[in-house]
Length: 119
Image: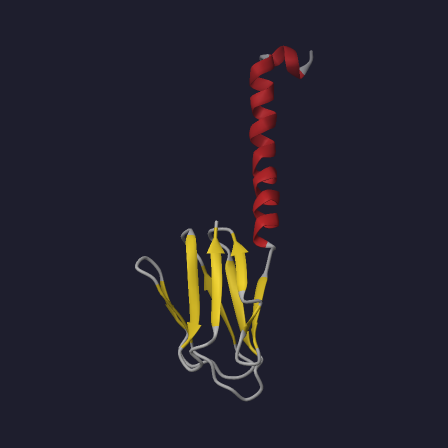
């Protein structure tokens, strides 16, 4: 007696699909979560100055500008962020939960600008 004779053909496919689904989802989520964006603050500028990311992704901003403080902020009607003073060598992470185009600035160095386009 075979397994196919014990259960209908459609039920067998459903069991196989349901058993495989968690593995497929885990692999897809792991691949999406593995992309990292790192922005450097050096020479009183963000490098790169423009990023395109997907909604839910995180951008890490590194202050590697010698002995200068930075203070990253974003003020948008639907999304706000303020790092406070960021010491040299420190890193901050900003998760972008919504789509849109966002301009991050440095409160200490007004010419610094980072544009993040979130798809």
